[in-house]
Image (cartoon, rainbow, N blue to C red):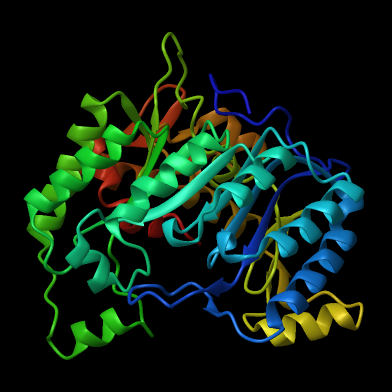
Length: 397
């Protein structure tokens, strides 16, 4: 990606290789109380079976790939054993799927070891995303996290010692019982680590989670004013520490002398999502967008494995959206970025003029002070980014 413009190196065509790949590792030591992502506890020989199925899926997509970004998410990818990782990495080497400019693996502080981190680094992993969520012991327990406060510091040091030079820390705010002082302390400690990236998410009460059930029966209350104040504190603290907000929840440390609308240390894999690039999604529940069609794998690890063992893709569905509907989705995704949508890039990506097709929505958001239409782009304002999900819904067709 060209960091100064935010535009992928070339516009995709039917003959273009797919340059981004996401692999979902669905296993966790324990399901967190807030999590709605597909995950399950490690049990029996299912992990080994999953690894074999994932490699079969790698083999299916490898021919049309030239990886520029790789991302292993979950679940907890760092939960996989050394042997399981070696099996995956050897298969990726065989299929010429290593060597990406950016290769991220998510980790939990409780499942990081030096040997595992070094194995990943030697294979080409150059970015680790660590799910700290909070530095407060009581809040970690409330969230159902399996790691302790001390494990965050220990795991961070392990990643650095193993040679990982780009570390992202995940944090959450608006957790029930979290005070502003707790949030300030968490931000200060995360920044003091010296990480290159922060991903900071407001706790969302997703259906089918214990937190949602507590909300329904009145055991949890949402304090919207406090959540807004915490978001403002995040912006102030991150900016003062030399981070730039490039997406609603994502902040990258600014390198000395760099210029451009998207920081060099931004997550290129996610920028590809938000700017409408193609990507493969492998593993149970993983989503993909390739050659104009979007798909989603089965959200069941056993069913996923059975499909691949039969030599079939594990699709739950695959569909090609009508052009206007797809353009609306891209508009919505791209508005999450602080840089918004460059108007010419959006038109080349979709065939639609953003200012014409969505003129009423643009006027409405601008009148509220939530957005700004500039000569070369449309973007949400700092105020509007706080309500990016609501703004994005206006653009869906």
